[in-house]
Amino acid sequence: MMARKRRLEVPAELDYLDLSVLSYLREDSKTPIKKMAKDLSVHPNTLIQRIRKMEKTGVLKKYSACVDYSKAGYDLHILVMIKVKRGRAGLDQLQGLTRIRELEAVYATTGLWDAIALCRVRNRKHLLDVIEEVGNHPIVLKTSSSIILNIYKDPDDFNPFA
Image (cartoon, rainbow, N blue to C red; front, top):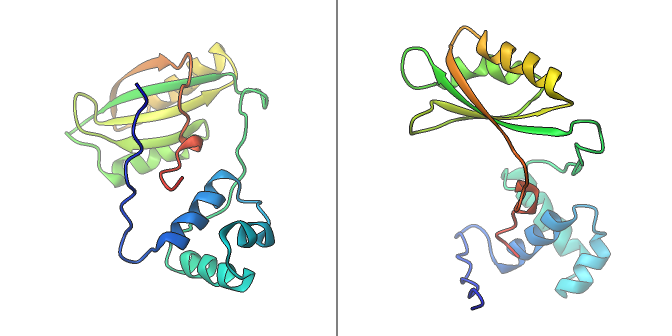
């Protein structure tokens, strides 16, 4: 059975053209303006104005490269669950963890763990070093780590505008 595509809810400040532009940029932010304008049947200047407006309002925060970390030598992708001292992890408490270079993301969470971090390392020795660094952080009570074996949907593939 094929999944039905849900109708996209359009926020009041964005219209269909804005969402189409976001979809293009999410798929490939290097798409030339002229090609995008032609595909969307709008004038290139209109497109440029829309993009600038979304940049100014913060809808578009930045443009970045999609890196294959395995090819760059970071073969292990780890999920690190973190229990902190003194209850739930606040932004000020977690800020110190964000300075650990190998942590690609740090989230305050609900549930059994106070925070979850995504980590990328080169090998098991490197993993041990990073887990030790996380565990030695003053706010950390304990950690539990899981190696990510396969990724079936990567955050880079998320495009609710398509």
